[in-house]
Each structure stands twice: as C-alpha cells, then as structure tokens.
Length: 334
Image (cartoon, rainbow, N blue to C red; front, top):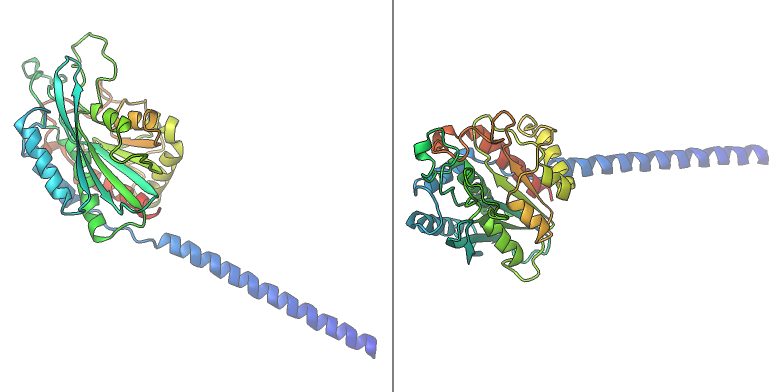
C-alpha cells in the first residue's frame, strides 16, 4: 500500500511540475508576444508630404541660393526662423571657404537640436545651397546660369523641415540634430579640366573638422539628397555601404517593412562624393546617403540634374512621402 501511495504521489508531483512548466511556457510565450507587439506598435507620426512640398516652394521662391548672394542670405534667415518654430535650440555656424576658382565664400551651416540633453543622438542632414551654374543644361547658352535646385537641395531640406515639425509635436525618445549644410554644390564645372580636390561639400568638410559642440558624437547619421524627383528610387550607395552598411540595412529593412520597398530596392549603386563622405572620414560618425541614383542617365542622376529645369514642376509628393516616412520610422524606433 505504501508503494502504491508513493507512486501516486510521484505521479501527482510530476503532473504538477508539467503543469507549472506549461504555465511558465505559456507565460513566456505571452511575454514574448507582448514585447513583439510593443515593438510593432511604437508610435511613428504620419509624414505630411504636402507640408514638405510647401517648405520646398518657400525655399525655391527666393531664387537660386548661391553663396555670397542676397537670395542666399534671405533663405538662411527663413530657414533659421522656421526651425526656431520647432525648437529653441537653433544655431548658425558661419565660416569662410575657398572655391575651386579661389573665390572666398561665406558659408552658413544651420544646426537645429532636439532633446539636447540626451547623450544618445542621431544626425540628420541635407544641403541647402544651390548650384551656381547649370553646367549640364541642354542649352549651352544657359550653362553659366544658376539653378533653382528644387530637387538638388530644397527637397532634402523640405523633408527635414517637415520631420522637425513632427518632432515639435511628438518628441522622439532620443536626441536628434538636423544640419543644413552649406556650400555643397560649388564644385568645379563639368567643362573645367583643372584637377581640384575636395572642391565639393565645403560646409560638411568644415563642420566635420569643427563640430557645433565640443566632442560631439552621434550614433549614426542619415543624409538626404535629391529625394523628390518623379520616378526616384534610392539604391544602397557605395560609400554608405563601406562605412555604415549596418545603418543601410536597418533603413532599407524598415522601408520594406512599412511598405516603401519599391522606393528602396535592395540593390547597390556606385559611390557618390557627397556630404556624408566627410562626416564618415573626418568626423568619424557613420553616415549613410539616401540619394536618387539613376543609371539610365549620362550623369547617373535625375534628368534635370544641374540644369535650369530643376524646378518644382518635376517634384513628386509620393517620393517625398517615401523618404520622409522611412526616416521618421527609423528615428522613432530607436
């Protein structure tokens, strides 16, 4: 009788242990499902492409934003005053640089910070100046004319201004710095044969050597350049893959997850000398470039690149939406 009782007790104990393990397993599964659900339900604001388009129009309305011109100075004042509506932490980094032809240029990098007390930071950037000459214009008579730069300059800035507006209403959990780099597009003309090195992206070169804050660090950076042309797609740019492939993978995976994979194909492009190159090589901050690369054109860029036809007529709000929504999702998921 004692042996039978012991067996019964052992059986009951085993059943109790199995039940407890099953309960814990179910609880663990529920916990995992809950955590996954929380990750999926992180709040991300809705990017307003109409708003970004309006910020672009307001920039282009000043005319070509060529350094050392009244239009350039007026647009700088507009950018600063508008960004101050979204954060009180706006500063202008003034500097001088020499162009390829030895012209002394007066530059202004415009830096806006959100959650400045946070140590973990992300850097977002675009260039706000426009090309002083349309050296790719189909009309040779216009190749010394400045361009409006709706896509090449104003689009990236317009997207970041709308992102800043969203930050002002729904603060992200991390620190974010938005930099509008100046003097990006003052490189030597296509027709010039002189061998001039590092004549592009003068503003980002200066900032990378002289950051707006001593010992400034960011977890990573995202550069937006030419993100508004009709039919634009964003391939994985070469320097981005070399210096920050883990950020490229993060951004492109999120783009596909939230429904913008057709704008962010899983294909690589050539390496493009842009502001991110100097942030990577001088400031040592891993930064990627979301840029429209078009292999079907001679230049490798959109059809109106560095021509007098780079106007608002060729801007697609759906492209602005794709670029802006993906960047917002990346930031709010940190």
